[in-house]
Image 1: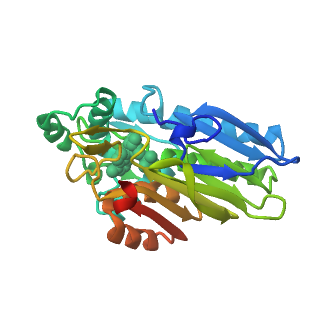
Image 2: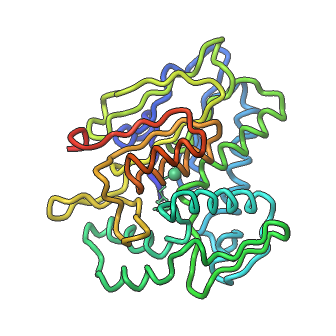
Length: 310
Ligand code: AMP
Ligand code: MG
């Protein structure tokens, strides 16, 4: 499960910090959903509930931890006709996989499981287990028919939407808020944010935390109708022989991404893109990562790397 990044709850794991969001005419509420703390700032409690309800619906569909979710059933049965929300998130995942040449790959679930266990035990896994898991990884082996919603996996393959699902849920919840006439709100789902409209006529202020000094804000972004997401190596990791191993995996090697980057922040028009791109760029490294960001029309990318990661 992903650790929360909100300062008020778990200051140590913060990556993005909503600055001065307390306003007389806005309420801020948080709830544990989709394995993270979801914080919503909105004009009233009704709007907050719209967001939490949408997250709950998507948690029940997308979680690979839940055997009864659509992803859980797809993983155990190897084939499923999925609903329209899953069609959209799978379609986007495959687009990013193709454009990133597999650096982003939702089929790396078997590797993710191995490394999550390693992080828990603070011990690198057996090379043979990684080699075995690698045989099951490959987004090109997903059969996907957008028209019918049919998804088929090869035997043993599994899908983990951990790198895109929260951003997708943010977008779906924002769409519901807009439909309900809400003009101003901010959703932060574990570092995947969308800033809807303005806050008292001004952009929302989001602070980016130094990945190696959690009490330091290194940049402030002023955002209106934009999404921002951060992926980093400082929430889920362990250090062995002076080497840091994080939860973001390079599907080409089977090992955690190792490009000298410790955090990637992406600003984009939607949270699904920002979420997926931040993970993909973390794996790809700076130069190919920035090309990918351009392709998906990201407005801004902030990469923390090299000596700043020491
Ligand atoms: P994020 O925090 O958005 O960067 O997502 C990290 C999560 O995505 C991990 O905890 C895994 O569940 C999953 N993941 C790890 N590596 C990859 C990858 N290369 N492509 C897609 N998903 C990944
Ligand atoms: Mg992501």
